[in-house]
Length: 71
Image (cartoon, rainbow, N blue to C red; front, side, top):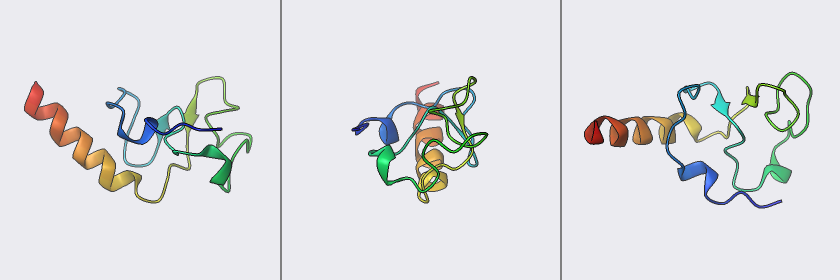
């Protein structure tokens, strides 16, 4: 499963440093918590991931800064 653009996609209102709306892994198959109930966006009805990639908090800050420059 490839999801290459997800890590760089614009922020969703439900994204934070600790969670993402949808999966932000470029290849979700490499996620140790892939398909884990109550954690993985791929199996949750609300599509929230509670185990984003290790570098997500840094990427979140970059995307947040980019969004605030546009607004």
